[in-house]
Length: 140
Image 1 (tube, one colour):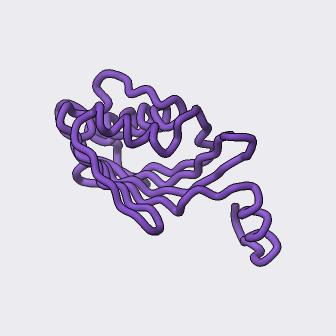
Image 2 (cartoon, helix red, strand yellow):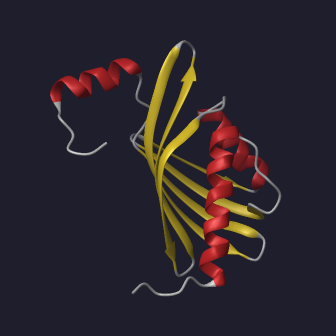
C-alpha cells in the first residue's frame, strides 16, 4: 500500500508540470519561480549560474532559443521539493536535437527557490546515429 500524497507533494508535482511546460515553451508562468530563484546549471564541460527569474529565463533561452518537447519524464518528491529526470527534443538550425537532464528543485511559498540542473549536453542527429551504431540500449 502506498503512502497518501500530501498537499506539499501535490504542490511540488503541479510546479514540476509547470516547469516542464516552461522547458517546452520558454515562458515562465507566474508563481513557478520565486523572484530570487537561484539556478546552478552543469553541462558536460561547463557550469553556469543565474539569480532571479529574468536571468534564469535568459539562461534557458541561451541554450534552447526555440520551443521543444519533453516526451518522457519522471517526478520524485523530495523533502524540500522535487527531482525530475527527463528527455527533451527540439529542432534547431535544420537538425533534430535531444538531451537528457536531471533537475533538483527546492520549493518555497513563492515557487521554485533553487534549481540544480545536470545536462548530458545536446546531441545532434549525427551524434545519436554514432551512438546507436556503437551501443544497444536496453531501455529508451
